[in-house]
Image (cartoon, rainbow, N blue to C red):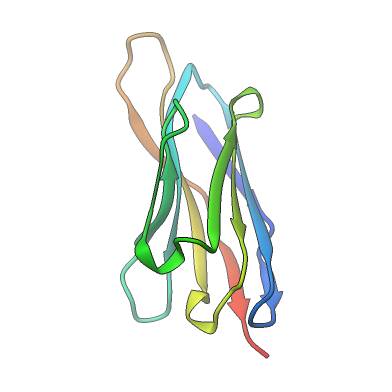
Length: 121
């Protein structure tokens, strides 16, 4: 199995910053994409940003210029640096990883438990 452990959420004032981390562990052969999703109350879960194994990134327009996704392949960890946070960024943030557990095995998706980010004065 693959486990994802997230950290870094919390309460922050508008305009502030937070850095989320997500470490993958367990039976992992290779990690492909890593990403962050969020779900606000009453809304569907949406992709915030993701990063491929080669470092290419993709992010939703609402966070461009404010959030930066990065990864440390040696540590199987993905980060989300969130700057200039806004109240509308308030949500539960979920880490997602696509990985194989054995050479030549299927690529499967895994989810973290979620971490709450609240932006409020």
